[in-house]
Image 1 (cartoon, rainbow, N blue to C red):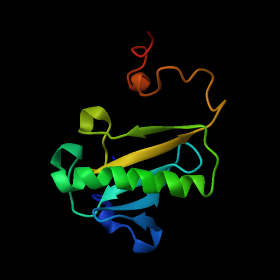
Image 2: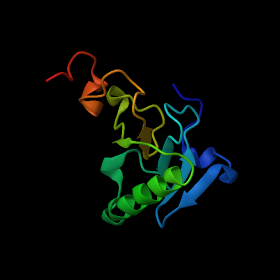
Image 3: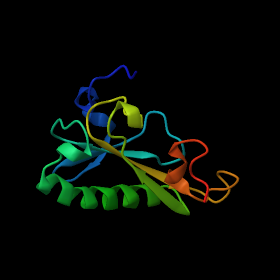
Length: 124
């Protein structure tokens, strides 16, 4: 389990950008260069607790995160993911969306992408 209860505990100097409803930080345990978290400014447990206004602004936040990544890195693709609930792997119960830059060759066969969150189930 994570050592923080929510991302509001983080120092504000970790923030690299913001929109009306979200702030952005680089992931503390990145899976690739530029891995960014988009975090709700209000404490919401997961995506399903976001308000309609927050959901509308999430697209802006994802676009901003992508721009910030591309100002520093040259990814070849992205995975966008949200863990909603402990069974889905959520460890900090404060809404956050992962923008994970992907690079050609970063894994042997990326086919299926997020379908592989359950080992052995993603092949088709």
